[in-house]
Amino acid sequence: MSEPTGKYSITMPRDIAEAAKARSGPSGLSAYVAAAVARQIERDNLNELIQVAEAEHGPVTDEEIQTLRDQLHQARLEQTQDGANAA
Image 1: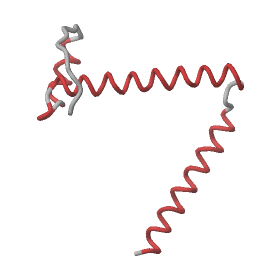
Image 2 (image 1 turned 90 degrees about the horizontal axis):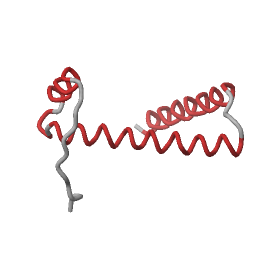
Image 3 (image 1 turned 135 degrees about the horizontal axis):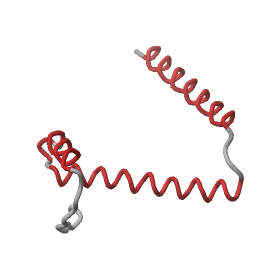
């Protein structure tokens, strides 16, 4: 069962509205806008979580970020290799 919906009137720049309408496809403009708003809410929630974590533990350094990116890259390489070896 899908979530109940409501009808809202919003105002946005015409060029953005037209671009969204052109890209919305068969699901329609409402679904496209709803998905965009949902993504923004997720980002806002993540930013709030980051602020709380940084307040408690201090900011994440560029070096820590790069180390984690390197670990993720290595894990993806290993996963790709494992998939190729299984074939």
